[in-house]
Figure 1 (cartoon, rainbow, N blue to C red):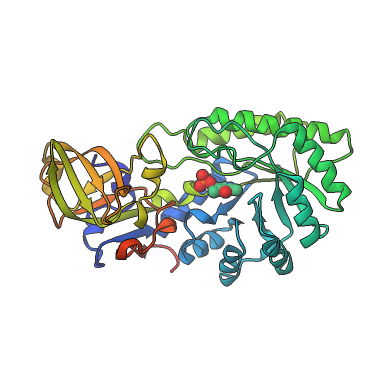
Figure 2 (cartoon, rainbow, N blue to C red):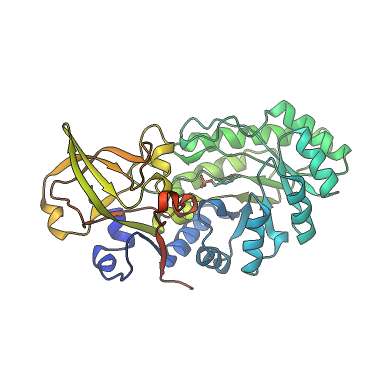
Length: 384
Ligand SMILES: *Cc1c(COP(=O)(O)O)cnc(C)c1O
């Protein structure tokens, strides 16, 4: 329950002196820079394009841009946010495989030239709105070992990817690369192993047509530390290196799109307990932040979700725990974020709960639902 992952990034002492009313999300920008450095060290030669949908705070974008990261977007508004930070659109990847035509045109107008696709329909939109653009195909790969599978929404199989690349060339587009997404918070190195092999098979087949792809993009899914058991970035780096060496050729540009990995561990979410009730035999805690104010992911993952948690009350660390059901502040029945979460028996109204590793996919989902304000972003360390 009281996790060292929380303590290592933002210590209890440090959290206690943050003078901001709860709820807040405090982010240590030095940890963001550190995670980026860890990524590039573990995957030398792979350029990291931050998937900004998981946390688009300008402070984080600045920190990563200053550290040398590239970026990956899904919308024109995201591109505009990057431009506001001085990022050159020519270095940005537009990896969403289904884009609104107007957004393709606007991105191309700004100088962005690389677009993902997974269908003939998307190729037609790109050809019309960004003639001559560089295109990279999204493969559907095994995502079963991730906490949040990418599912069937995107991606195409090897045969169709091959046909689509030839179609892209006939449409005057530039067959540029191949990408995939193994699913978010992927738990196995084998997922990247088999995905890179699939990409390799496409490289091989396209050689017969005289097409050599420039970019292999390893996508996202690199796991952050929440509890335990995630493969380390070093282990993933080894597997990637082994598999790259087995490709028919080494594409000139190796990229990846880490989102969660770069930012999750940098933040702690602080929320007050606003109610404690015993309903039947179930201990309920109502807290200021629920599914609609930042803790959406516990609701999305069938197996629940383990943010490392602690309490602001030092004596709680010595107390026995009780299994709590944790609910958000809103009146909506679905606003329940955890069941049987072991927390100190003495927790009471007014105590603050800290949710560790809360930098990814929290604030990005937060709304004012039911009149409850989302957590206030707070930044420490780094550039601000
Ligand atoms: C969301 C997304 C990512 C980032 O995924 P993480 O699991 O956060 O690393 C990368 N690429 C694309 C295309 C995405 O949509």
